[in-house]
Image (cartoon, rainbow, N blue to C red):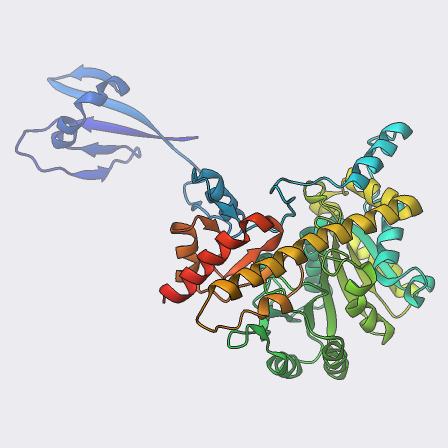
Length: 464
């Protein structure tokens, strides 16, 4: 720590307070300052000379003095506020993490079995290669595209294990910044809160395309297509593969075809964020249909994957970045550069989550059990969604159409509530949620649906 020496010299009581630097970097202050700080005399070393008192103090000044306090994360901050609340009726609908009907965290049975296999085999904790666990990279690409997909058979996919979805997106952003300088990424309005942070920190410019229509609480498809069409040729278009976050609103299969038409026509590069494969509809194949549609057209594309939701591996930080290329040779070169980016960033990825995924997806018995558990989790969320809709329509006598809740998919629902209304939800009803009106249905139980519907109706009708 740096130290600044202060020399305090007494003067006549009538003197005004003055401060100036001496040639030695010391600061002289008048006696008015001394009179206000008598209680701090123990900090000073005193020496008497010619009737004057000279005092010296050491003041520590941090070299990080210019570092400002960062604002709380808009999503993770919700959980912190929830934990601080003592209200018995409180609900945490902020973070997208699956809960049981008793609102407790859930570790999948198939994950426990996969971990037991690892213990039985006595697997070590040696470093993984930069690109990650080979067995994981193989099964994750096959799960995404289908094992018999030509892009897999012809080895056109460069797959690198990443630190869940966030880390995989960050690798891709660094690749864009390095090899597509000046290229813009188009992101939906709204989108997951961390998308903008990732591109900002990667120094990749971005702009938004229309997605959510507040009038219908649905998809602004015409606006979306128009904005993608108007973007500079060769832009990257970030798409949510399924269960759009935060809205829960997905394009229909026909709309996906038209989106692909425009992207192909404009020579754009599709960039998918797939965080909920199998967790949205309960079907791995259904939730990967949008990605496979683009791959079938022969388009080059990027896909980030995460296993936080569908396998409940939130803390394991396991995911992947996949780049589909026109040839295996190109895929090899792209993979080499992804590894080059990863090396100084985090060196190599963790092994535990990768082995869990490899064990589950690579074993037919465990794979079948996983699909059954995913259907159970997706089914519980669908039941909660239906119960919330039923309660809203039964209790709200205004005639408002709440059917948009049933049209949305996945763990989130975009309620249409504005910032003031969400604050009422928290301050009056102790329902903790993000300010954009998103709620996580994965954190809601059937027993709490009536309470939540009361809170929504009150906030919607009584808060402007």
